[in-house]
Length: 317
Image (cartoon, rainbow, N blue to C red; front, side):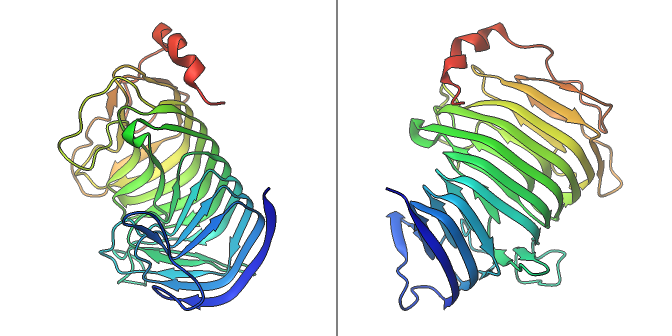
């Protein structure tokens, strides 16, 4: 039975801190702090440095509030996500600032997040500030600056993943490899649905808008027919500049299970340098533009694919 966890505060911990055990979930996935099967959870006033991987991980939790925490790790430290959420419901992250080291006043820190006012949050990590894993429901992220946000990766090793009701709003993303990203492995199942990215400014971001259903960390990933079904994703008021090394919009959806109901409105993305504007990339994605976009997106497929009805039962919610 899930029990109220209460409030954890005023702890300073480094790698292998006294009194707090770093949990080994799957080698070499190590976290500084992991919360499991906790409800009505408030984390306050904690400082964590140089976690071997995730700094905070919330598994099977409900009603999570995080404030007044400080997280830092070196720039070249992969998979050191600031906050990772998995199999968890009702999480709110508000009024935060996140930066990579390229443009922030914290030049040695690739991603920095902090909360102003009564609640204050500082995160400096070598990977995503916030990553959303399988089983995440009702996640609300607002007023975040300098953030790199990811849903996934999902569906690794043919697993089923379900994510729904995710909102990211009123945010700024600067000098990052990715902006708002959904990434899934081939061979997975389940669904990502009801995702809203609203009023987000991009500043020299390499991949401002990206859905990647061919995520792979090597060159040896085999083609597979099954996939996590991505649907009902909206991009509204996404504006700013992008790094011209990649197209500003990349929708790479599964060959067999297309992305559906992808909508864009008031999207204006211009090159950070004086180069031509490359065309967006689309592969097997159905959707519509509610308004004209810059660059124009002419590669969206119209309507709803009849073949998707056969896999609709695989949608989680």
